Image 1 (cartoon, rainbow, N blue to C red):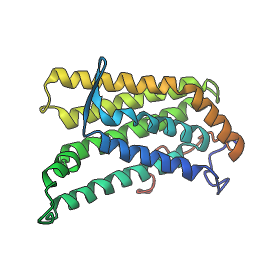
Image 2: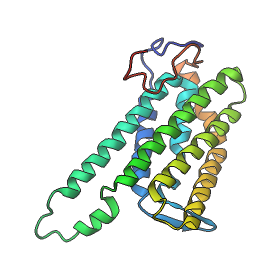
Image 3: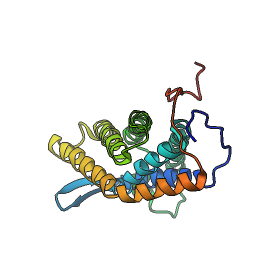
Image 4: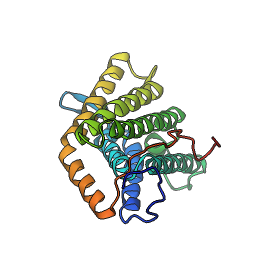
Length: 233
């Protein structure tokens, strides 16, 4: 199916599953980011181990179901991340039980840190929408060919935007500049490497979904406004 309408097929068997996996990866990555790891030549936050999968799911969603459905998933993930941050903040501020000795540990690992929360939300928003936009536009430009060019190219841009924004907002002025640059470079190389390594699996999943769902959306004549749900055009 080549077209612009996201309602041409109102039911997809696997769409909700991919959306749930996308949101789960996003939330788990945010929690894991509280630890900074050193592995071989790389220094990165713990969320980097899993977070690249969110871009792979994002590529699959845009390639198969189109930008408009991908936009829905991105906003769902954004809302879930915001809700998680607010709940952790409320729990942090509520008084602990008199015989519970782990308040300081909770605040150290899961406590509400405004800069980290802001960095995560802004970086995710900018990176995810950049990735979806480029995937959609490149699909039109290449007429559906060269999937590997679209997945890798869009991820290189999206991951780059995400990594730089997150690290600068979260850690600039807190970490030494040398460590900050090392984290940015390590994150970017690792995330991009995962995308490239998973390209064969991405091909298989895209092919499977297009066949099973009987859909292959080309985003002709749509609005790319990320705030489409919230403003009238």
